[in-house]
Length: 233
Image 1 (cartoon, helix red, strand yellow):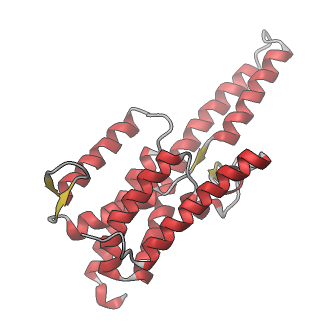
Image 2 (cartoon, one colour; image 1 turned 120 degrees about the vertical axis):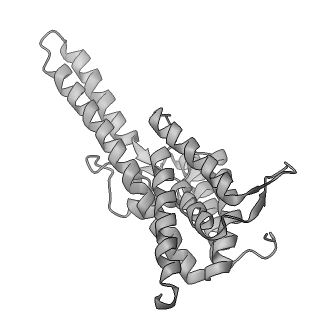
């Protein structure tokens, strides 16, 4: 399917950028106490840390090594397929649009949850039976939640790539790593999709399930449009 010694240009650069950003973020936080997530992960617009560029930069931020490894492995596999099929320019445009589109549903869900927290906070603050010190603790908890409620990672863009691979290479046999079993790509990605839907509905913490679903849908829709009008691109 692909060779690790012949990775296409954009896929290779995406891998390098994500890895460099992750280690730079880690080193800067450990040595200087500066958390780049405050500047480049996607915050709610109510947060003082929110900046418009975060809709793009969040794609290159990762929470930990496992998060990074999983996303880079997926980009290595599926990025090869699509970049070799389309070429670097089209693949890069596709990747960035999928990342941006993936953020929208997750942002909306996060904002709705945050509004519920604000409503509960306001009720507590207006409660005359609570002491000023307790109210201060409530306010501190709220501002901490507002600051730490972020979306980050290449997962949404990766799921967009998977959606594109589903639409173009769905019938291609795919071998799972370390498991000598082949499964058609469309079945494998369908399993992932239902897993994300279940995870999103069960409100699994720490995983941006709706970003994954959003990226997958954006990727599929874009491929359907592009492949139908390929000559006009």
